[in-house]
Image (cartoon, rainbow, N blue to C red; front, side):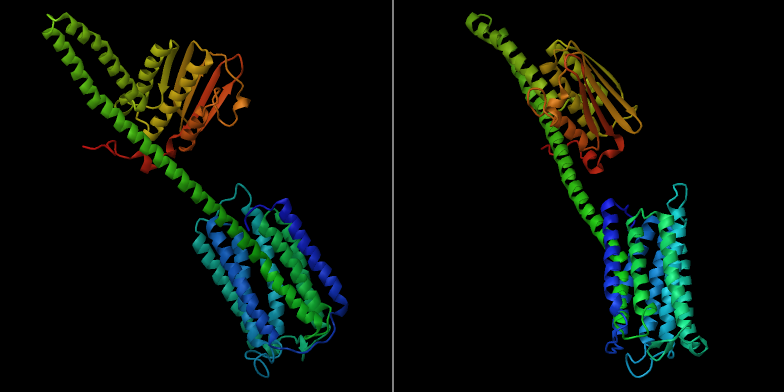
Length: 516
């Protein structure tokens, strides 16, 4: 109901009005045709409308509790008011249960029906007036939604009980509207015209105040059209009850009770579908976050084992070979062989250290992102011959572990692409925390490339480098953008909200998965 109306919605509502008016025009010539009197028809119809209106009132009240718009409260009161009058109408309808009425007199049901059809459009006018204020951007919602609803609904109940009491207990003092099953003229016609004009006025007020911008406005307008046809067909244009118009008018009344409810249920169904899809996406994204966290923990564990345990064994092996050369100096062949092993052992130690750093730099856990990036940039420059400088001003305090890990991996992948494809002589890394985000910029002075060729996230050699960067950022609510032009430099922008990290991911113990 509170959703904005689309062009398609407006076409549907207009189509419904055209169908209603066309059906009315087709049946109008036979409206006064007498049919068999079935008094029980009225309470059966009333029971159906009561159920529909109560459901509508409950859904409107739920929307009011969410949006706290006074106009929705006015409409809630309208649909809470009608069931009480309709219930009294069902009990007072002549000959429906036994000869005469269960409550009131011969005029009670007619006056209840007219009271309902005169006061309901007054509530709609109230909705239209309040809607204009509610949808003003500068208007503030009521501070105490529950207490406001309590007062409004209590007043509605008092009004409904007052109308019922007057029509039941003061039946003899009210102007008679019925003579048996026939409408009394001209007094009855005057009252009916007032009720019909009230609906027309409500429709005009609704259209002027809301411009039919929302779904609920559209279908409230269709409801008023249906009720106007109901009044015309079952009362204004016929001579009394149990004529074709009397029965057909109730069909329009039943439709009128269904339109707003159908719109609310449709919106609720759409919101439920969106919630399910959102929950599914969140569940999938949450699983991916956990997988990334597990991957980082496994990298940390392997890096520690390589650095601490395997590294210690390599060091011990190197020392052992050096000691062996001291012992075997007299045996030149043995000494020569031992000496030839030393460069291999030293190279193996350096390679293991490099692998450990690539898996999970120790500096990232011990000293933070800036130190880890500077260490990586130094090693990268040494191995590639490309000058790299780091300017990190992320924050005085440590960033969440998941964000630090993601930024490090994004920089790592970006510099890998620079070394492989750019032909650059210099690269710069900037990390800054601003406006609740960590912004990372990696730029080089290489020859660039045509980014339009790699819209799916492929790196220039066809690999999925850019996809990896984007996925890491996206899992933390961030983005990665690339600007590059053939013959010019390339710049990678990564933005990650600091408050985006799932606490369950960020607080995994550093020793998770490490066997002792």
